[in-house]
Image 1: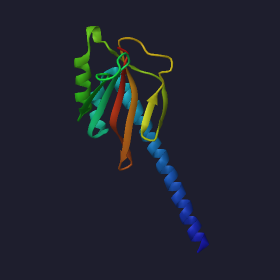
Image 2: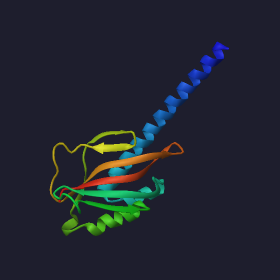
Image 3: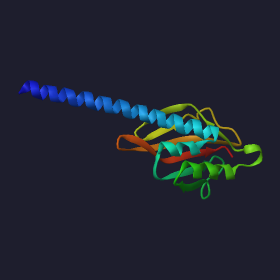
Image 4: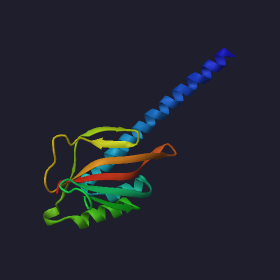
Length: 149
């Protein structure tokens, strides 16, 4: 009986370890896909991967403003809508330019990027990606951007 119990625990441990590993790989792929397509202005291509389950909230935090109006919030059903909205917000020669800094980490439903070295004017930085899991795969439910104003 003890051997059966031990074997069951061992199988459960190996299964949960494999599941955690595959979830980490999925999150890494999600983060890289969002970051790469954000910078390349091709986020509409992510709609094929079904990385949104319902509306995604996008927040743009303005670096030079405080109080009311310092955060813009919009919801989108697709990455194509999000990309088109960002394109409409562009000014002269495509600014603000989309930037992605070094990834700090992805953990507990949140991928964050490093901006300790400061930010530049006319840049729109990918600041955070928030994700959840459904059927073992991550999906994006919120994206935070930082406007260098």
